[in-house]
Image 1 (cartoon, rainbow, N blue to C red):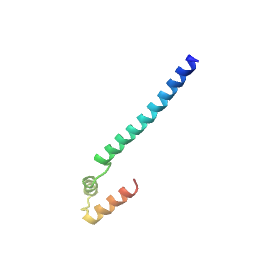
Image 2 (cartoon, one colour):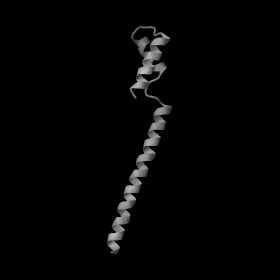
Image 3 (cartoon, rainbow, N blue to C red):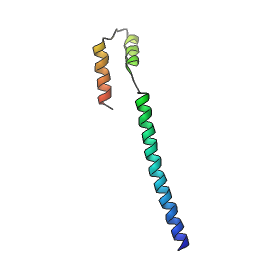
Image 4 (cartoon, rainbow, N blue to C red):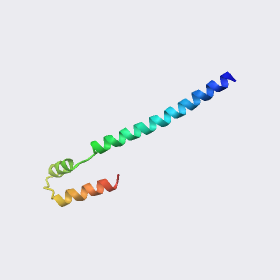
Length: 71
């Protein structure tokens, strides 16, 4: 019985550790995305200028809106 109980405690510990690790990692990842978005208005302006176009503010807002909707 002693071996069986130690195996059960180990198994429960691994499961609890995996769940806690998953939730903390998910929270940290979401925080990083919120603080450092993958694309911002400055990047969009730079892309337009590299293509030789002067973007209007409406175009930039439209692109940001579509990016945020697809997340």
